Length: 203
Image (cartoon, rainbow, N blue to C red; front, side, top):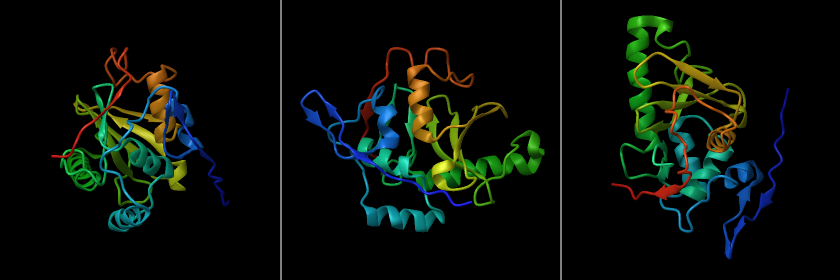
């Protein structure tokens, strides 16, 4: 079955500030998380094409829109998204794909599916990391189907505990921040009152 995706462009206006065009898929996120006026470490269409060629797979459109609108930074002083354009090795998507997948692969080879019940990218339908927390939890896409259909999986930092959400990345973020979703992996005080995005320059 083929799935077609209609992309509707909207302008997001907050006070006197008009943010750059955004896909309607990010609309729910804007209700709970305002982007910076000047995002850092964003990418052009050509640069995104190069990143996807390097990784070997197309990335979800909402993720690419998020990076181009928010850039590199932290959500709620706790949650970090990997950015392929970040100069910070701890936040660079390409660096962190190798690091996070290799770490899980070592555990999986030693302990089997009890340690990780999912395939790991580049295996078909494998986990592909897109973010982390201050506690060391890792957020993944489950790469099944079209990239815009990929679901979210969270792995707790210190245990083989996984949560799977039937949500896109940005829908997951908006629902976590609004309280519509609650993760048992995340601490009880997240997101709390701090639902801000703070830009962080690469380093």
